[in-house]
Length: 276
Image: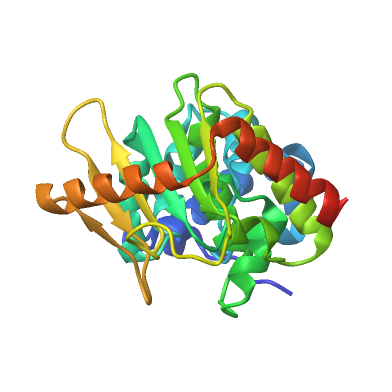
């Protein structure tokens, strides 16, 4: 049995963005005398998920918000606007500045010596990575990570350049099927004309001056910034000296890496030999 909020409770302006989104869904549904089952059918999800979203217990996917704007009269894009705010607050506070910058970037230059970066992770790979930390709200974390990838589907997507260590291809994350799907995705990125993927061979030696994942972000206006992954949280650096050092380090990493065609061939080879 679930208990719905009264309209007075639901319009509390102090509610979180996620709770506010859910309450707006509930209020519109009640105005239309529509059950959760009926709304679920209209937006292609189950009754239990509708209930969780209305309570603010789950981050809705974009398709849910789009469906609400379509189903409810006078939606006028309101649920997509509320969804964007709710999604932003689904990220940890320290990560929100990075997400805002990533959305505005025209170019992303990424290095990772261990994992496929989140911007191109498959659902299975992201789930396997995130659940290792035994977090609360695993599905919400996966949804938030996958939504970041929408920027690569824009008409003007940022140019993506990935430099990865060969260990990224061979370290099994999740199951072999998860790895197969992930390497297929990585190969698709490598074969996209606007993107670049280079692999640093694992020959037993240390290549490059850094061992931590980092991202260089460029914009139409303003200077480049760098985001460094770390534990327990990452951080953004905007000082010119730091950005220059990161740029020099990335140039060296690209020089150590295999050419683009050879990198794609290696991904395909590992995919065929290890995960077929």
